Length: 183
Image 1 (cartoon, rainbow, N blue to C red):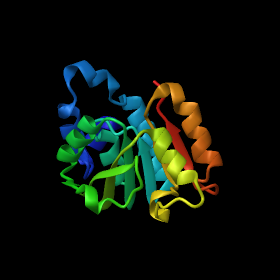
Image 2 (tube, rainbow, N blue to C red):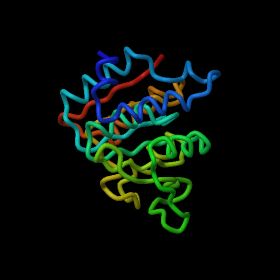
Image 3 (cartoon, rainbow, N blue to C red):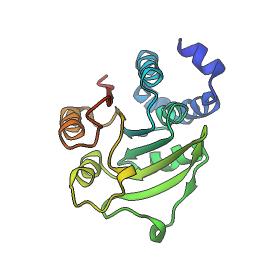
Image 4 (cartoon, rainbow, N blue to C red):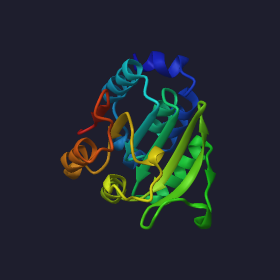
């Protein structure tokens, strides 16, 4: 299924570039083909409009999300990896004064991938979710609520992220889909 996806998807060139961008030492951090197949199947079934990804890494899953969603927000604590993903996904950098997020969150890059808006946010998953769950948060609604979530960040805190998504109102209650890569 995954090989067929790579051959036929609009996002195939981005997926290939993301895989090439991963250093040999970090290649084990890429979501495996089984997780990618599950993610793709969930995306096809759900047809989400807004997705959040915790853990950008090379942008491989970001490209897959973009191929199926209208808007993707991808959050990572590693600025170096976000910059690499931005280059792979051909996103433009955002100046510090042009960012619409409260500290410690920072919009690092934005643009269009496969027809979808993609925003790369430099922040820890915990700080982003905290900002998104505060009712008086200065985050715009499109950066606070999602109908699809993919968690591929710090595995030790995945349960905390799931809790924040579900109970904090970040993931839409009716019909929202949550996929976690715990490998």
